[in-house]
Length: 320
Image (cartoon, rainbow, N blue to C red):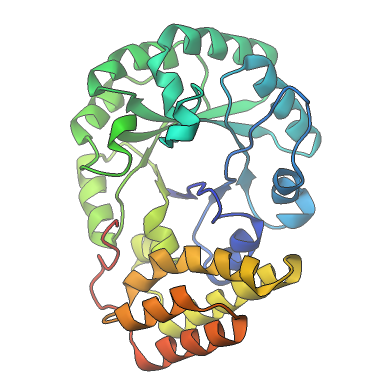
């Protein structure tokens, strides 16, 4: 089984990825948060810093591109190829209303004929690997049959399926019935993404989908950075390991950001997930969220790690 770390905007950038790789060795591929190529043919400084090879030494990284314009995708892919990337990933999964309203991400799934033209354009123009991360439809799971017909026309390196529709966002359960149809219909290699939050979830999934040999982990692994190791060989993350990882991420942000406020914003995003790994952490979580200075933040984090233990249950993260 291959374990992929999902791209999560604002969270899984290069500072986080490098810290994760230092303490948790089981992830095979990290996907960058999406790059949005525009008509001006220029990456933002944030985007470029995130994919620069010198910021990803020792990591297998695949950049993800978000666009519905074939020429923009082609430009971005060729530029990334110049930096040494042999594979790029197309984002057809983002459910954010601001993305969908522009016909991008999972919003593009509502225009299957245009998507077909787009895929024909990029596959005929690029001599590099292209994987696709998709949902099963925009408004209804019934859309997936047509989408699969389109995907099967192209040599997609891997089709990463999150079996929800756009309107689900991250609510409701992933649709495993549609996923089973994908297994029977797809001519391309498949990867599964969606609600694998514990080793028990993983065992249930592999029992139902023995032919799928890669999984993408997102929210569950931000909550529990050791999740891939727990799935692979039963190695549970300990509190000291999580604290060392936290400190490495914090140090990384302090080195590239100015002012307490910016660093705290990044760290508080992580705690929205990681706090769920601790029993009885509501009081500490509230104080972390309210901290305005790094000194206060550090003191509260030290207090949390000193006073509380990690939850024993494998399904500590509840998906919220």
